[in-house]
Amino acid sequence: MSASAVRDGPALLSCLNSLNLDGLRGEYARQGAFLYVENFLPAEITAQLIAAVGDVAGSVNRNYLPGHKQGGSVSRHAIDTRAPVIAELYRSSALLEWLQQLTGERLQLSPPDDPHAYALYFYTRPGDYIGWHYDTSYYAGRRYTLLLGLIDDSSCRLDYQLHTRETGTSVVSGSIKIAPGGLVVFDGDALRHRITPSLPGETRVSLTFEYVTDPRMHPWWRLISNMKDAFGYFGFRQVFHRFLSGRE
Image (cartoon, rainbow, N blue to C red):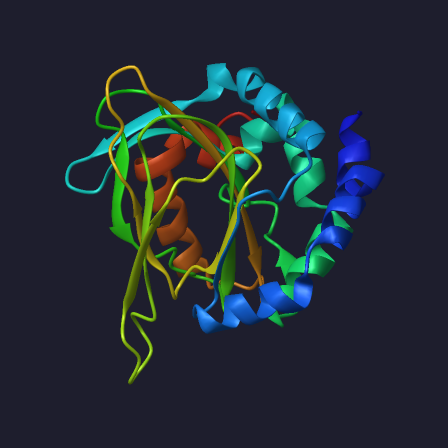
């Protein structure tokens, strides 16, 4: 299967059409804009994405922020040149349409300068983790996160808390392991979540897609977002690659 076939090929279309969208939409709404689908991607697409992990191995940026996170990350800028199959899936019109029907929002791709638009996250050393947080949107509108499981030979779990910002609603806690090909989708500003620490000899690699309802962002917030990404995720070279070298 070619990279372009992943984008809106028969395997993806068949998978999306087989899902009970009405039932999933109801579950998503009841959980305060959160949904987990264990078997989401077709096996052949999952295999291509897993293969792409090896293609970007030389671009992993390791970081450690005491009390917040430790791990490795690869931004969309490195992915564009080394693993285009990921970018093709991100831009799938069929996937975007399915997500719009699920969320009830008119979603758009993140702007080309957003390193988080699609990114890989590596938990490959003892103690790799990310603490409790929200995927805060600096955009004028909402930002929705898709978390896709790729490799998980680990004890890491996605712990989450639902309804934390809803008045008069009890907080609901949960914990899941995301199987390869599994999907988690949520409103980044609504879900409080973390990834628990990895143990020696374990490996976990996940892929995220970010879609927005309004791609506008004030230049000041763009600077803050870029600095956060440079220090906490991808390093200055990947975040500011156009300014530092003209290319990744």
